[in-house]
Every structure is written in C-alpha cells, then in structure tokens.
Length: 427
Image 1 (cartoon, one colour):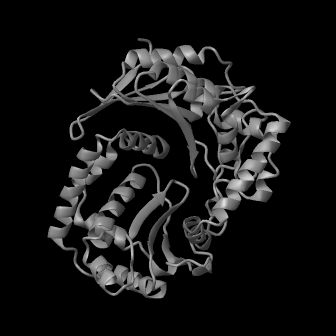
Image 2 (cartoon, rainbow, N blue to C red):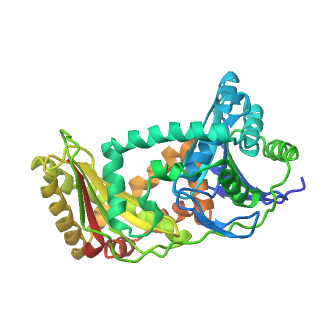
Image 3 (spheres, one colour):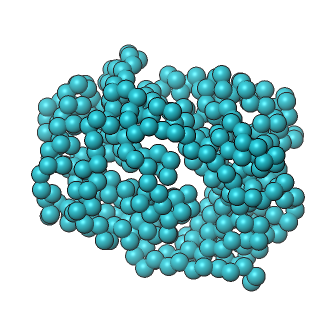
C-alpha cells in the first residue's frame, strides 16, 4: 500500500486505530472493533459555528460571515438536484445524519451489511454541493422555524444564557443555528465561499469504526475521491480568534418561561488552553463530577433532603483552544438556595483536604467505565474526533486517567474563581 499507516494500540481497551494521511491531505482513522456487526463512517470538517472570521481560500481575502452559516451549510449538503441524500441512504437501508457544533461539522452513517455503499455515498454527499437561489431561500424558512423552536426550549435558554453571561465578544454566545436576522444574509455565493474554504481535504477527516478491512477501506476512499475535482486550493485554513476579555459580561440572567420546575446553570469562565491540556481538563472534570456532584455524593444527598434538587447535578467541562468553561446545572424548586449552596460547596472543597479513598475509588471506577464503554462504538469515535480537533495524542485520556493524582484535582478546583462565575435561571 502506498500510504504510510501509523498503528496505535491501546491495551486497556483492547483497541487498535490505523491512521493515515492521503496525498490530498485528508486524515483517515480506522478503529478496528473485531466481531462487531455495526459499522460507522464519519466525514468531518474542522468548521463550526464560531469560525466566521477567516481567509477565503479562493480569493485570499479576509472575510466575516453571518452567524449560523456552518449549520446552514450542513443542512444544504443533503439537498441534491432532484433528490435528498437522506432519502437515498434510507432506500439503501442505511441510517445517516449530521451535526454541527461550535468547532466542527460531521456527516455520518451507520450500517451492518452495506459498509462500502455507505462510505461511497457519504463521500459523494460531502463532495457534491448543490446550492441555488431557490433552495437557499427555502432553507432560510426551515432553519428560521428551527431557531424559533429553540427559543421556546428551557434547556436551550438556560444553557445559552449561561454562555451569554460569561462571554463578551466570543461567537459562542450565539446559537449554533444563528439568528433569524443572520441567516437572512446567507446566499449561495457565501455558501460556496465557506464550502471551498473549509471543505477542502487539508481541513477534513474520515473516521471509520467497526470490523472492516483497513486496506480495502483506504482504497474505497481514494477511489471515490478520484471522481471529484480538487478544491480551488488545498491550503491550510486560516481562522482568526476573537479578542475575548478574561472577565465576565454579567453575573446573572433570569428568564421567566412559566416552568413548573425551574432550571439553573452556573458557569465558571476559564482561560483557554491547548492540545493535551484540554483532554486533561475533561478527565479531571469527570472525576470531580463523580466525587462531588453525583447522586452518590454527600452534597447531593444533603441538597436532595433539603428539597433543593429534583434531578441530577451535572458538572461538565467544555473547551477548545478558543474558549474554556465549567457548567454546573440542575433543576430545582429552590434555585436561589441551590446556587448559594453550590458556590459555598465549591469554596469548601477547594479549601479542604481531598479524601484519598474517595479519589482512589472514583478513579478506579472511571477506569472500569472506560473499559465497559469501549463496547460502545460511539465512545470510540468521540475519542478520535476529540484528538483530531485538539491536536492531542490518541488515547491520551486513558493515559491521563491512569496517572491522575490528587494534586491535579486540587489544582483544577483552585482555578474556579467566583469573580468569573455566572448564574442562569429559567423560572
């Protein structure tokens, strides 16, 4: 085989990933899951809702695009002349879909016995854009309805109001789908500009999970790509970061939506970090969540008995090299009480010694969960995509988990600063 293939094995998960870079710059990752019947194929681009300020790869000029365009583009790629790609996948008995996040977009399929067909159709889907004045206008109406629907969703409101309170200039404040006003500015020329820039092979990746032949899979990808013209250029994409201050915009946002059970979210704004450190924060946050906020924690028991919580307390880290924060969220009939209790509790665990046995048992449990969850193909592809986006080494999360120490937990807790904390409540 012409392509140089890197083999990455992980003994803990009994898993092997084969990585190669094709001559056109496309990264390909194949995770072998021997004996599994289901196969997943994913075709992604490092392009999400926060990437509106960049160099147009066709003209070489810096451009600033309307909010929501990456999500709009995801929708439009499914529409072809005379056909809808989702219908074509369905006729073959193949499940397909896509998603757009803050920093990437992924198109994917799942199948049991039509892997070759699914992979070929996936590449064709992404490589054959079809934008017209008419279908763009039609999509503006469809996505406009989607935006309106989210505006009436309490979960959406409590989450994005947390981001809007934390961030001052950063586009993470804006719904991934954009706004009614921003999507009205999108036309087919803008879509082609974004497509040609971000959907070039140097900015994209293919991930395959399942019991497949590595050599055959790479050949299918190469053969299918030969059918399509190269993008105008295959240069590295140049994106610009917004100037985001370290301070928060406002301490508290409240919205009354007539809920029977109020929702509350507390956000801690953190300084952005890069590469492996992002993965490390994710692992540490997962351990803190289990130790201090899960239903087995002393804090949850106390708050539940006080009637301050009625559901799980989520403690989640989100971050790229462009933003970083912790969000703690729950539903509560007493939102003022639970917010004060959480802030006091964070201060308490920051200032007291960490229970060594609790840490040891939590770490052991998380290692066991990783092994069990390796049976879920979704966890395998998430790990690979995280390593691609953060430019971190594969299986670094496993390495970090095995070597994490009490000091790492303590150090992370100490960066949670009340002056950088915000509160979002939907009543």
